Length: 241
Image 1 (cartoon, rainbow, N blue to C red):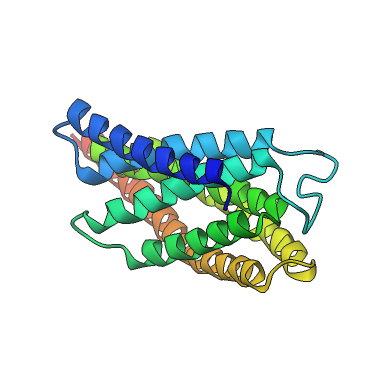
Image 2: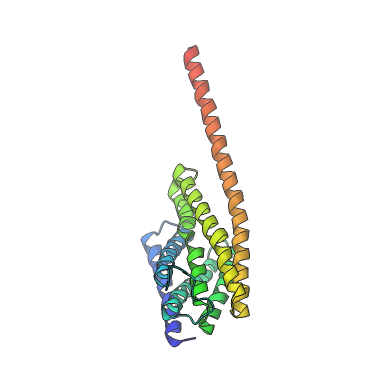
């Protein structure tokens, strides 16, 4: 691994940690998770922006395939690796340890470290990063809105729908194509394994999201029906009086 990449990772971990502690000072009454999700949102926006800027040819965004990573691609991946290291450690100090999230982080960290060590497959990994982080701001917005008191409101439902829609488009439509390109190209076996692992994790979360949205929309429809019946009954009472 190049020396400048090691420095980027070290500075990145330090920067994400400092940002978290600053947010804890700014929002002393908010939860540990609230502040961490703001950091995660900042990373998601930064990762998508940097990944977009690193694309070499928009006619084929994940080209050249199975080639030497460019310096810009390496830097993009190093920034996200530093965040994943910070976030995995940070989550271990939360009240509840999310093992699904921890496994996802471990798979991602191994994949990114392999890419940075081999200095290969940068196009595929940056494409995977772009796809993975595209829906993340809305994932965190959902939970932030809940803590701000907007749970079970149209605003929170809108965030749910946006998250589910973008996740489905990015991870279940574009994601399998990137995985196919990665697996069928001349990439190291570890990177191919990581690509398949991320796809399986995405599929697992996709089914959980489908169940969540089915529950949310059914709950919303039921609530609307009850309010309609209640309103009708009130009108009948007023008319009878």
